[in-house]
Length: 368
Image (cartoon, rainbow, N blue to C red):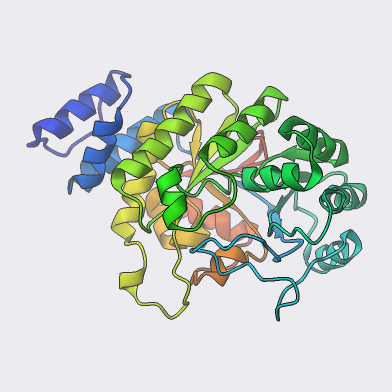
């Protein structure tokens, strides 16, 4: 039975409610309409229903740690403030041994995942990236390596001369277990041209994840929203992810990432509104009916809005992180990490059940 209580004076919204409740898929026009409507309460309730059917009141988190081996990058994406040129002040490229020293200073016993991304540094060979993972896996065999974006994998094919599957196989032999979701931005070649995204194009992003799924890997996927893209661009992005999921069933979670301004002192008019962030999470839940989880990423939207997002379709609050750098380099004002206790408090404060998970959504502990 429906729990929706908002009266539907709008015929179009009522039609969408009926489609969702009858298990019918939403199309491009439906998704664009949901972005345009001001009926955010019905949208949120509908997304909440869809999430409760999949996950009940459970909300997942992981004790993880973000690592960045290098910030040197050959690309110059318009939205990035993390990258540096080789030799530029603040640029770095850490060896495996140097990263282990950093980890030893910050790790705690509960960490079960390393989340590893970085720049496209063409001043080091592909073997550097292989050896980086190998060093971590040898030192911390119990920690899952979630490493590299699809764009990084595409970059590795260019500097190594290997195919996508050959690159993935080399990295898996070194300890790689899953890919991060980054590098998707907006899956539109027109958008990528406007935003100077010269790394992997739309087809290559999807091809990398398809290849990973065919090798038996389960991966993550993202959408970076809030710049020059249209509502139609966002929905088309989701539909391309949904189509690939129909084909491979390899995605575990969809992560909407709210664009951060380059300047930390940027005013609220330079940031996505809370209204836009909640809408995007709810619409993601409704459009991506074949992906189990939608993540509310507190690094981008803040802990309090993350709590609200748990009633708008989100079922994951990411993890402890320890010290996030990429969004904060771009102007994020949120905490760079949260503790396990804080994440449990955050979820319980939203009236949900916190569940500590591993990388692959196997439940470690349920906090009823």
